[in-house]
Every structure is written in structure tokens, then in C-alpha cells.
Length: 614
Image 1 (cartoon, rainbow, N blue to C red):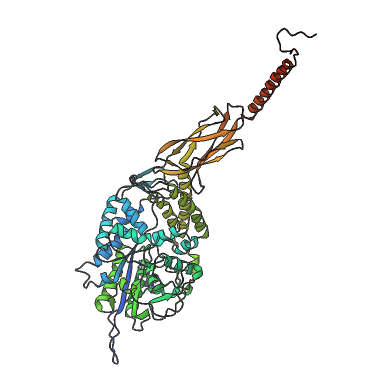
Image 2 (image 1 turned 90 degrees about the vertical axis):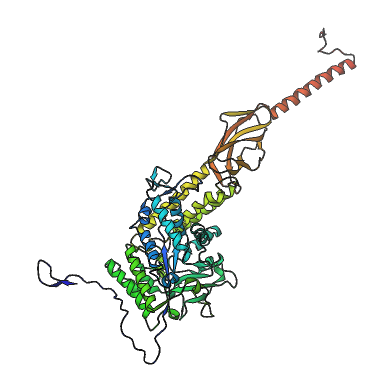
């Protein structure tokens, strides 16, 4: 940019490099007809970082809690999510999108975690004052109306176009595969489709898994295949030799858990165009699949980065050399895309221009998924080192894995009452989802990476604390003081208390000395927010004061609450009384026999009245 400042002569004021799309250069094809239009497919992501407060179980009546109220601003007019949704809604209106080419070529990609959060906001919600104490003081949120309007707009739009789900909370699928927990894996890749369909009232695209990183490790590929996925959407440069095909068959190693003869196709997207799209917005990012020699500084102007994205999109569509596989262009922005509404509108306008001009032709995502893979020989995955660097740390994965058995034990102990609104699954599923949220890849490739790592650690800690509180809400209480049995055998009364809003089955665990025998009373069901007296058959073979320790456990032995102790004794003398009784009886028999003996022999006995020693 050249100009004349007030303080001097003409000078170069600034320099910015960007691509300038040109569509109307004259082209001559003397020997052949013009190339066919590029088959065009694009995903339109709607996602956000996790916002729900961590460590809190599900509830049937209480409003959800959010860590902050930033999502309300994003959903309202002028916000990021409002802008992304409004841009695609406006661009696909009937009087704007002739054909409708743009609507046919675009598929909404929705994060179920965002959808759950927004749906709960529509019923009223609270914002915690301190994110480190999610169950502490909270204030009513201000985004209920914005959430209602945004969700209704999304439902209306989703009813008219393709919709697919992304993995829950943009979770790191490699981390989920490393944990190797079937329920967690299902929550990551199966539940999202069910949630999207239920909340939006649509039939979304099935069998497709799009990892947030655009990269899939062999273990993650086996995991998603085991959970019903037939196609993985990944960058074209993360497989060995994709050739000219945009759908290839992946070679899955059975040692990673894939079944014999298992098949998983890879749907490949253009990494260069998608990387240019990732640089657009308030928080530009460099995808994990971007080669090291193509990774650059994202600190240049936001306008220049937008122009680069428009240029990359245009060039890939009109390139007569057809560098795209099979004459196609699949554009995939990042799942957490921070483009503004205006930036999104410009990108959609460019795509619509390419479609109207004949440079591109719509190809719906479902049509891509039904295409057979190209090469007969399976293709291997090529995971870049940067994807490993950008993945969730081992400390977070290990901490999440440690909490899963506790969640499973608690869920198994809860009572499924058909008449109750709260079920065991709905009560504990938010805790399992919190582990997925802790392993999110949101903001792990942009300037907010450090903040994302802190948030993950805090979320794991809150899950641990939340589970501690839930297990601590079930306890056993002793009568206090010394409990005395009237005889060697008798009932020992205890009180089991359940402060959870759902019933729970418990076992009574006993640690007693050898002189105390406690009968097993079997499983006991405690009512929600109630208590029950436990009558424990007890037998004591000693008159001393003895201490017995009691605790409540799940059926697999995981302890509820804190153990309690009871001091017991018996009024019966036990073994000592038996010895004394036997001794007294023997003495009595001896004396009676002695007297009879003397009488039999006609001799006086000392016990006879009037006996005098001669």
C-alpha cells in the first residue's frame, strides 16, 4: 500500500500478501472441449468449546450450570454461532440459491455437545460464579431467548438440507481409542448421531466419522470401525498414496482391535483449501495435517487470511490440471471455526459463484459416501508427527481412564425405577461426557492452547470431586456408644442413608474380630433421599467390648461414604460362664455322691444335722 502521510512524501505504508481470485480470463480449447465442472462438496461446522460445568450428575428438575455466559453472546445477533448459522441460512434461501446447488453441496456438521448445551439453555440455566466450584453460587444466565431462537433456526434449516454429527465435544479419537472403554467409545462416536436426530428431529448422515484433527491413527480407525462407522473423513495427505481417488479403502491391523476382514473407507478432503479456511477468523489455527514446510505465521491481517481462503477455494475449483482427486473438491473447515458472519457469507458467496458459473457442480455428501473405494489394494494411514504433538496429553487420558470404573460401579448400583424421571444412565452420563469434554481438541491448535490444557485439567479434577461427593452421599450410621446384646445372639441395628435423588443398591461390608460373627444380610435397596434401618444378626462369644467396622459398598466392592464403627458386648458370660456352671455342677454331684456313700455304709456324714466329730 503506497500513500502520502501528513508528515512527508509518498512512501510504502504497508505490505500484505494474499490471493486474488480471477474467474473471467479468456480460455481457448482448440483441441478439446472445456474440462467438466469440479464436483463440489463442503461441510459447514457448528461447534463450540465445552461450556457445561463439570462434575455434576444429571437431573430431572434442576437447571444446568454453565462455566460462563459467553455462549449466550455467540448465539445472539452479532455472535459467532449466530453469524455462521445465519450465513448458511441466507445463502441457501430459494430465491438466492438457484438449483438449489449450494444447499445440495453443503452439509451441516453439528457438535452434539453444543446442541445439548443450547437445548438446556432454552429451559433456563445458571452461570457459576467460580468455575472451580461448579456446585457453588450461581446466577441466572441471560441467553435463554437467544438459545431458543438459534435452535429453532437450526431445526428449520436442518429439515431442508444434509446434517451430520461430529464426535462428541470434538474429542480426540486417538485418546478414546487408547483408553479402550466400549461405553466411552460409543459415547464418542455412536451417541452423537442419536443426539442430533433426537434434538433436531432429522435423519442425519450415518456411518461417517470426522475426527477433529483430520487425522486418524490405526487404533482410532479400528475403534470407530468397531462402533459401526463405515467411512472416516480425513485429509488426503494422511494416507499413503491416495492417487486420484477421493475414497480409498483403509488397511486395518487386526492387532489394533479391528475384526477379521473389517473394512473402513477413507473419504479424503483437500488439505490445502481446508488449511486456508482454518486460518480464517478470530482464532486462526494451523491443522495438524499441514506439512512442516507449509506451516507459516498466522499473524498477518485477518482480511488477508480471508482472501487467501477465497483464492484457495477458487483456484482448486477452476484448476484445469485437476490436482484434486477425481476432479472433485471437498472443503472442510475446522470444527471449531471462528469465522465471523461476514466472513462466512463471503465464503458462501464465492462457492455459490463457482456453482453458478459452471466451474463447480454440486455433489451431495451422501452421494460421496455411496461411491465405492478406488484402489482394490487397501491404503495405509500416515499419521504426521504434528498430530501426535497436538493430541491430548497422556496425563489427561490416564486420569480419564481412572474415573471410568468408578462411573461404571455407580451406574450399576443405581436403581432403575420405571416410575421415576431420573434413570441410572441419565444420572451418570454427564460424568462420562465430562471425560470426553476433558479430551476435546478445541483450541489445541491455536493461540488458546494453554488455556485449553488448563481447562482439561480442571474438568478432570471436578469429575473426581463430583464422584467423591456422589459416593459420599451414601453412608451407614451406627447407634453410638456401646451396644449391648442381651444374650450371645441378637440383632444389631444400623441406619443406611442415601442422599442421592435416585435409589441405590448396597452391600454391607463387615470387618469384625474372631469373637464376633455377623450374618450376611445381602443387597439392600435404599430409597432416593431416604434411609433404611438394617437389622444385622450378630453372635458374640466373648463378654469383652469389641469393635466392629461397617461400610456400604457396590456389588463390585467399591466403597460408599466413610466406614463407621460400633462397640458391642454381650450380657452373657460366654465361655467363662460355661466353665463356672460346669464346675459348680461337678462339685454338686461330688457332694451328693459323697453323702449317699456314707449313708450306704452306715457312716455319719459331715453334712448331717447334729454331726459331732468323735
